[in-house]
Length: 331
Image (tube, rainbow, N blue to C red; front, side):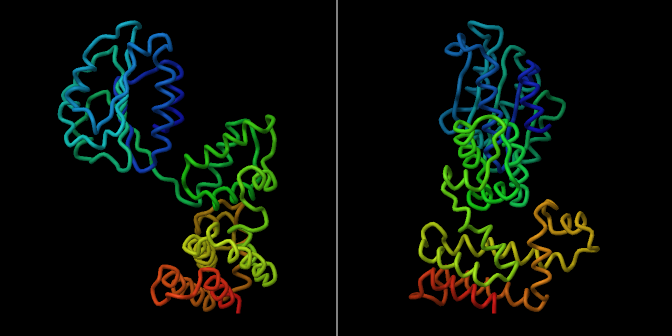
């Protein structure tokens, strides 16, 4: 099941007796757990019928024993177990799941990794609802931002969604927090523009990884140098070890355009793993760089990635390394 479906079912009062939330992406796990703890037990009864436990401080058998009790004030009790990845064995839960207490809802948050498939198979024929929370790929973040903003009754431009994803990375909790701040300050149905992002989140609409990528894809030497000089003057805000992966993504996807089976935009976008609305820079890059040049640029990026990490370089600043690197890319 998707996290949206789980939340929808909980909001309707359609509960599973045991939820096991696991995987690499903590954001969706927290989203489900926080919604459940705010919804399942009435606020007036939470002091008696809602318990939050931590795997690092609690034995699993203690959790099971608590689950077997009946609620004190309402018709249902909720036990949320955070940090479940600290349990060494799930045998007590496997046995409990065969005949769970119907007036208890158990939620296990197992973050950072998937539950071992061999353990999961032991829950076969039990009413445990498993949800694997998977990390989104970098190219999926802008579309997720667009949908998430829509759920807040706001709108966002494609460029703005890319700006946010490039600046904040794939930390969904951090992105969500910044978007919530914007939602508080904006009227419903407002459009989140680059200017609004610059004013409220601190991402410059003119000096960012997105604009640098666009300048390089277009081989706009003047614009690229203006951005590079700004980056070099603000090394802490634009570390080279962050800039290089962004440029690697740009040029590797331009290379991917060459190997797409057709020129159809949808086919090309699917081949390189992006939304077709974000295709322009990569097709423009194909016109401006040959395959040989792209292979050379990838080699340049690898060289300067090592230098940025101290290999073969002890004196040159990150800003100067960036200027050298971009000069070689453009010339």
